[in-house]
Length: 281
Ligand SMILES: [Zn+2]
Ligand SMILES: [Zn+2]
Image 1 (tube, helix red, strand yellow):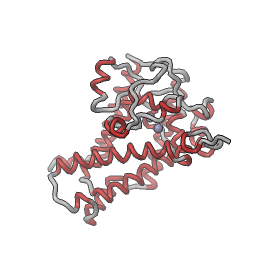
Image 2 (tube, protein in one colour):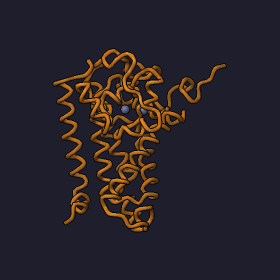
Image 3 (cartoon, protein in one colour):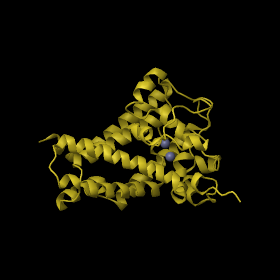
Image 4 (cartoon, protein in one colour):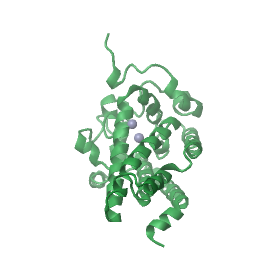
């Protein structure tokens, strides 16, 4: 059995294994060396954020049972996509596919900030009043479905090896938990680390209440896209301890911490105050 077969046959076990072990490691690290003190009840936030993750997993499995791996297999069967068309060594196809998928997730993230109706949905991720390991998986079900559709489109054009899709999803899941966690990392180590991966200090800038800071550091995994396309910002103006996390429009626990409010956020109020559709009458 090759490495690829092993990954394919044990996909769910690998995914869950990585999820739970990295979650536990980051949760423990947050207790031992927290970066900031939390502002709202951890018990309430965690139970509602994790409730949302559980709900999203169910919705995703129900709507797209075959998921991204199924789409990659479909593309291989049909001979669709670049890597089912050209002959490339497996390692090169895997490396290139992971890079391309990561770029499109970055681009999607920029677009959900730029397009007002998508920002409505993405506000759920930003309305968390604290920033910790559970924030990393806190997305509205509509955004989870949108992400999957975009991944499907990229997979159909790219024709990546199944191994690349599983690898990408496991890595993204792991780095999202890492870079949302409320952990203290020595500034010197952080400086080196953020040359290859988005660190918590780098992504926390993106969760600032200050709009210009929110509109920077869109990467969830590789830090290079932000540097390459001009959206990189090293630190928040107020510093990591003093900066305010969240968005101005939603500051109450009812919207920010409890599931019914979180789910309702996309449908509440008007978006008139955000970058692309700001109106000055
Ligand atoms: Zn965002
Ligand atoms: Zn985030």
